[in-house]
Length: 146
Image (tube, rainbow, N blue to C red; front, top):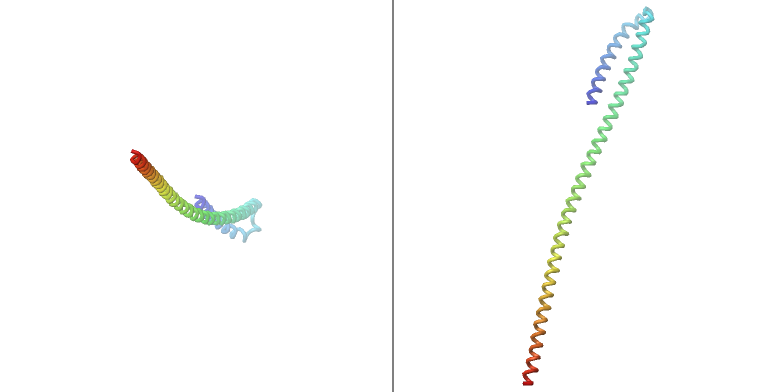
């Protein structure tokens, strides 16, 4: 929208400049025949021409600044896109490591449960063996006394 306004102003400026130049060409040749009002009008037109030239330069500078800002914005956008891809990659890696950590935790929990069951089974088996041995001693001792 701003560019459209700038283009419109540029076209208007060129049109006015052409009109002023053509009027100046006709009036310069007979400058000494001009009345005071015409000379004053001519001076105002020249001042207006200078003002329009300054406005044109200002618009050109503004256009240059806008182009520079647009280029900077494109660079920033590119950097942000790159940073987003990097962050998404890091996020995916964190998700994968979280999944691996969860799986490792569940494997360790199963190993601990298996170890507990094995220890319990060994202690029960030792208890049964100890009872059998005690029973055998008891029966051997009491059979000999009878």
